[in-house]
Length: 303
Image (cartoon, rainbow, N blue to C red; front, side, top):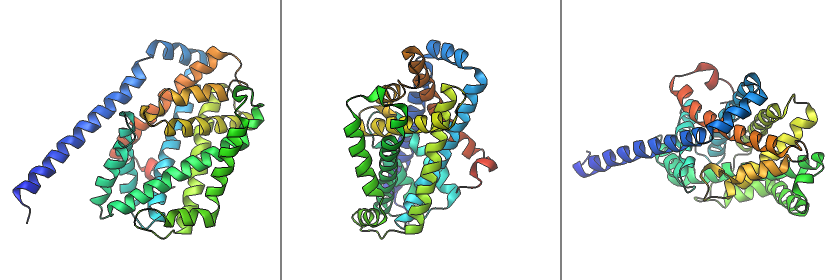
């Protein structure tokens, strides 16, 4: 039987969750409106249709990333229904717009527990999710950015190759399985779910890369590869800079540097980075809305 103390505590948690969500949405919207004048000029120069298409690609990337998260949890034995997992991820990951990196993870632990998933399993799944993002991001940057000639990253080629090598080692099946077994609760890895997560990870980076390539111009294969590598590096660095909400600032600096050879006009590449940031933020905000509206196309497939 529920005690009055437990009921009161549950209500307080509910109020706190709503408050954090409101603050997170407010912080995300502030990101969008803070540079509205420069944003308007940039969008006018690129073309509304092109920017809208790039935004759709960003939304697809965020949606598939939710599937990566679900597969990451399933890989350590934390099974969530596909629709519930997407809904849970879409709402809780808005916490990344608040200072500090812990908000979305704390929310995910609490919400997953309501579905019968033990906290240590959720933490393990979250660590797999992060490991897959960082490792694949480092590998893609090390492999794809040299196609641009590396002019924007002079003097950092050795570090990039080292990061790529470390990322590739982490993705080797025996190493990845051992890393998973070392996580909290000593979960056993499910190779099939890890493989599914990696396939979806590739689709996620492709969608993000295509979003950036569309902002650069009419994307060809070379442009897509370079932009995918540039965004993967920018995302990875932005994630590692935990003091910046959603990697704000750090991600844009890296993206500008990585695309310097592809877009020589510094003003244009800075505008591109700004538009990309806003599109990613809008995608993060729109996904929970679409999931809440039970958008069938968004939930179908890739779950």
